[in-house]
Length: 251
Image (cartoon, rainbow, N blue to C red):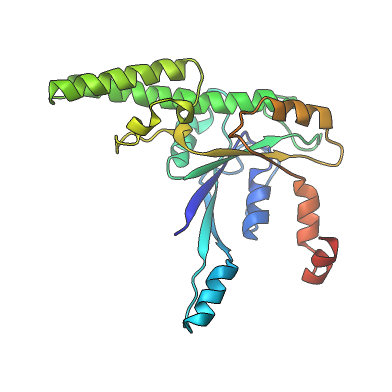
């Protein structure tokens, strides 16, 4: 069984380029904000040697590998949770994914504009995370209002009200739902889908002139469960154009 991984981040940070590398697609990756509006989807098979061996042992006619569905989601900006830059629509696209890959720009390129005019990876990262938190805060607040108006067994209503009120305070401290101590109780509420409850890892998109000190300082701000993958998209794009033999020699 496969799962969905959504590429999330500000405009012009390299999400579409990374999507193309991962999926061998050629969707537009142009130098203007919101080049991507509708999400792009593509499946990538994940070969498994164990599955191949089992298939041979059982003389299987067909072997089906697991697959990851990558989703290239349009760029978010500060104010997205309030609808800025079609933010509400773009945030809704994250609901369908299982894992968030947060792409952060570390490369300097005067030919690729930055929506804020200058590059500050930590600020960009925190801005997007805050929009995810604010979106969740809005969802939980509305859900609590519905619970309070709903006719249901009073003990259960009190339990849910206490749980959600506590979660609201947690979100107001700008913390992810994934770090909420009672997250197990939230999973029992099937129609409450929250963005920051999803696993997240970071893709640091660098170039050959990136500042190592800035990257290291950024990594030091991450929590233990936030893993960071570093990639030079431009170099990887050049390598992808080589023949398989040439790629093997480089690796």
